Length: 407
Ligand SMILES: Cc1cc2nc3c(=O)[nH]c(=O)nc-3n(C[C@H](O)[C@H](O)[C@H](O)COP(=O)(O)OP(=O)(O)OC[C@H]3O[C@@H](n4cnc5c(N)ncnc54)[C@H](O)[C@@H]3O)c2cc1C
Image (cartoon, rainbow, N blue to C red; front, top):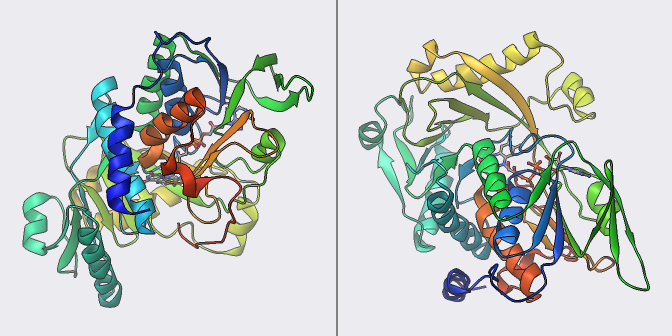
C-alpha cells in the first residue's frame, strides 16, 4: 500500500467518529481475552466506543510479554516492507494521542543505534538512507554530536551512530494499568486470575458462550489477545497462526537520577531510562545458544531457576552496557525477567476473525508495544462498525505465513 494512501487512511481514522456512547445502538457484549498491552488497548477503545466490555486475564494485568519487554516505541529500519513501516509510524502517532489522552508518561527522546563491525554499520547507514526516503526523521551523527545529545554515553571504538529522532519508550505496566482504569471508567469490567478455557457456539443461533475458570460468559464477540500462548488461537478460534516465539532477558534497575534521555541501541545491548528513573536493559542477540539453555527453554520459563542464575544474566547485560555508559557501575539491579515474544512466523501482526469462528477476533503481534494504541483503535472500529479497515488488509489470519527470520 503506498504511503499517500496510508496517510489519507490514517487521517480518515483520526477523524472517523468512533461509535460513541451516545450512538443509539444496543451495546455489543465483547470479551477481551488477555490483559497485556494489546488486550488492554483494545478493551479501552471498545469500552470508549460503547461496547459492554469484559477483560479476562488468567494471570495479572501486564504480567507476560507486556511486563518483560524493552518497550521501545519505534518504526525502525527493521520494520519491512514500506507498508509495515508506515503502519508503525501510525503506531507512533497514536502513542502521542493516547499519551495525552490518558496522561501516560512517554520518553520521546529518539534512539541512538550503532554497530561495531564496519560492514554492519555500513548496512545500517544504507537502511537509514531508506528510512529518510520513507519520511522518518533519521540521520547519522558523529561521536561528538552523539555525546552532545547524551553526555553519559561513549561509542567505544565506533565513530558514528544512527539517530532516529521520533522514537520513544514507555513503562508498559503503567500504560496497561492506565488503559484498564480508563476502560473501567467507560463501564468495562476486568477480571484477573480468570482463564478462558474454551468457547461453545450454538450453530443454530450463532450464540456464543465462553467457558472460563470462573463460569460461563455469554458474549457477542470475543477478542483473542493472548500473546505468545501457543494453543489459545487454535482452541478459541479454530485457526492456526504459526508463531516462533523467542525469549529475551530484560533487566530493570532501581531508580537513579536522570542519566539518559534517549534509547541506546548499542552493540549487544539496548538501554533506556524510564520517567520513574529506572533503567531498562534488553539483550540484542537473544539468550546464549548452548545445550543447557535449550533444554530449560522448552518449558518456556518466565523466571530463572534461582537467584544466582538471574544475577549472572543481569551482570552479563550490565557489563555489556557499562562499556558504553560507565555510570551504570553504581546502579543496582531490581528485577531480571525472561519475556517470550508473541511472534507470528512472518513477523507481522495477525488481526481479524477466523473463518470458522466469525465471532472471534485474533490480535497477536510482535512490536505490540509500538502498535497497541493504533491496533486498539482499528480493532474497535472494525468490531463496532462491521467495516473492514484497508489498513489491516495485509494482516489477516488466513494469509500464507512465511518465516521472515526477523526478531
Ligand atoms: C524481550 C522482549 C523485548 C521486546 N521489545 C519490544 C520493543 O522494544 N518494542 C515493541 O514494540 N515490542 C517489543 N516486544 C514485543 C512486545 O512486548 C509484545 O508484542 C507485546 O507485549 C504483546 O502484548 P500482548 O498483549 O499481545 O501479549 P502479552 O503481554 O503476553 O499478554 C497476553 C496475555 O494473555 C493472557 N492469556 C493467555 N491465554 C489466556 C487465556 N486462555 N485466558 C485468559 N488470559 C490469557 C496472558 O496471561 C497474558 O497476560 C518485546 C518482547 C519481548 C519479550
